[in-house]
Length: 158
Image 1 (tube, rainbow, N blue to C red):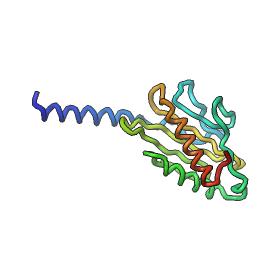
Image 2 (cartoon, helix red, strand yellow; image 1 turned 180 degrees about the vertical axis):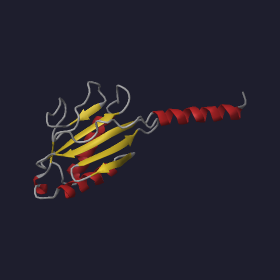
Image 3 (tube, one colour; image 1 turned 120 degrees about the vertical axis):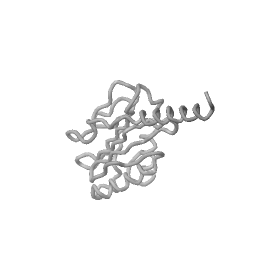
Image 4 (cartoon, rainbow, N blue to C red; image 1 turned 60 degrees about the horizontal axis):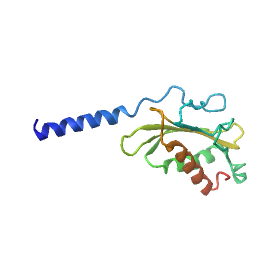
């Protein structure tokens, strides 16, 4: 087989693989009764929600932000989310953000959600892979990076 045809077939296969790794956003995204959907049993999801699943800590809004509006808090959150590598915000309002983060090589997509609690005292964060069983700790590192960025901006406590 000529080299040119092999290269074209390789590029076509690579393109199909990369497009196939995106998946479609789940129908379950978004706030649900003041929380975000619980993580499945697979180890490719992190959730800091009201029940604080094992191994996660609550993300508490700093006292200095107690009198801030929801819009002000969520603007700071959006700034921090925008700084995460290969992450794009798809929905943003005064209580909720949904962003997609793509892996570096195969462009696997993870959904990152941030919800401001009803009383404004806590950020509930859920980061989950759309496909597969394992994420090699990527979602946990993403949530920690977001926590650190918001801590540095004075929005969250440690």
